[in-house]
Every structure is written in structure tokens, then in C-alpha cells.
Amino acid sequence: MPGSSVNKGRVIIGMSGGVDSSVSAWLLKQQGYEVIGVFMKNWEDDDDSEYCSSRQDWLDAASVADLIGVDIEAVNFASEYKDRVFAEFLREYSAGRTPNPDVLCNAEIKFKAFLDHAMTLGADYIATGHYARVRSVESATDGTRYQLLKGLDTSKDQSYFLHRLNQNQLSRTLFPLGELPKTEVRRIAAELKLPNAAKKDSTGICFIGERPFREFLNRYLPTEPGPIKTPEGQVIGQHGGLAFHTYGQRKGLGIGGVKGQQRQDGTADAWYAARKDLATNTLYVAQGHDHPWLLNKSLRAENVNWIDGEAPALGLYAAKSRYRQPDAECQLLNVTEEGFELQFSQAQWAMTPGQSAVLYDGDVCLGGGIIL
Image (cartoon, rainbow, N blue to C red; front, side):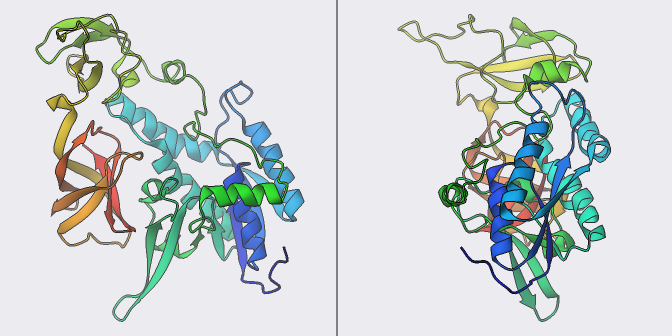
């Protein structure tokens, strides 16, 4: 497959060792960019353990770079990661919320520390293997504005995780996979005989990896056991620490033998984590997927970022209150400097404090905030 002879500028691409960033690097080179790979090392604690694959990831990234003919360097952002992402992660868990570290990692590391480093290398652009798109829009009053759009492969769209980006970051960012389905990315990798063509996608949190979450969190947060209660106040078990539980959680509650309200045939609905009371260190659980405590038609969010630099007009939009969720029709009711309020047409399940509520106008990601 011949590449372009036109030099479109220098692109510094984050190469993780995975198939997405590898194919992205090759596509950029084919399109006529000067491509330089950067492998970001963000986590050093227990890096030699079975759960941390950074050594193998680096070998994969370097092998791909050699095969497709691009230079690559490893850069250590571990201290920035600990200060900007991990410290906030622990603060949120300590406050009883469930943060999304991937959102913060993108905002603080991949599109801030990495972008800053890329600029020192003379980059015209940075690139990543995210499934998302950037569109420039010309305005007579505001000049060029940049929009973040969903990736065309809706099953892989990652705009939710990128909603904290701003105009400056988007103006310098390329997403080569934005218009491709994952199946095509895999096909290209196989055709090129990339050494990681069959490597499975990473599903672990960006620094924790696939390790047991409770064991990991125990090393960094003091945990205090407390009661598990029903909505009526009946104690039916004990939790090992509120930080280990998130709204909508069904497995790992330790109350599997508690039947609660039963049907005539002796069966009973499952229990779900539904509320936390930090003052009394109590985890409340509700029986049944559609218990009223698990359903909400409104939310408030704070710590907001609007991609355009200012809030959209009040009105009808769509939103996600968790990543793996279809867009839900909603009304943007109120916007302040501190946050915004959404009213949904249909009740949403297990909306979780600390997670991100992200607003969309069709395919355009407008921004979002942290659910209270």
C-alpha cells in the first residue's frame, strides 16, 4: 500500500502497544504525515506484577514502530499521573463517589502532559487511537471552532471519555480511527502482519490494569467495615468499606443468601447497591433491578467543561450518565458557573455520583460534568 509523498506536518502519536494506536500510526504515515511515536509510562508502583503489562506493551509498540518505519520513544509521566489523576481518584473514592479515571487521564495526561511534550518535539498535531472525530466549523463571528464528534462505529465510540477537551486541544488533535469500524482496524492490522494484530483490547482502568480492584484499593485507602441495610433500615449484612461499592452493583455484596421479599414460587429478586451514607458508614441495598431507589429522572452535575468554551442554550438534548449506555433524551434545565441540571424523558438506572454526565446534540459532544 503506497503512502503519500506530501508532508502534511509532524504528528506525535501516543502508541500504547495496542492495535488501535498501531493502525492509527500507520494510517497517518500513509496520509503523508511525519509520524513519531511516544509510549507513555504512567504507572510505576508494582510494575513487575502480573497485572501490569507495561513492559510487554512497550515491546509491542516498539515492534510495530519498527515494522511500519516510524521512530518511537518512551516517556515517563508517572509523577504527573500520581499528582493529577491518582490523587483525585483517591479523593473521590474517599468521599463516597465512584470516579472515572479514564476521563481524568485523557484531560490531564494524554491531552495535557503528552500534548506539552509533543510541542517540545516540534509537533504540528498529536494523535491517539480513540474512536472519535474532530470537525472544524467556520464562523463569521468566532473564526474557526472545533467540535468533538462521536466515532462512526457506535459500539466503540469514545467521545464520552474525551468530553473534558477544549478548543486548543481539539485544534491540535487527530483521531485517525474516527470513521472506521473496529472490524476494519483489525483487518488492516492483520493485512500488515502487525505483531499485535490479534492482541485483545485492554479492559482495565488506565493504571490499575486487570488486577483485583478491592485488593488494589485496600493498599491506598483506609477502609472501615459497616452495616448493609435495606431501605426499611433492616441490617442484612456487613460491607468491607464503602469505597468498594458502586450504585447498581449486584455481585460482591456478600449477601447472596439473604432472600428478602420472595415470590410465590420461592424465588426472589437480586439485591443492588443503591445508596451510601458516609455519616453512618452505611451501604443501602435495594431488591429488584427497578427499585425506585435505582431510578432517577433528573441529575445535577458540577466541575463542568463545555468544549465550545461556553454552555449550550437550554433545551432538548441527549445525555449519557455512564459509558455503556444508549443516549437518553433529556432537557437541559439550568446552567450555572458551578454546574448544570438535566431532566430525562425516561428514568435512568443507577446514576452514580462521581461518574460523568455527558451532553450530546446529535453526534456532537458538547461537554459534561461530574454527577453529584
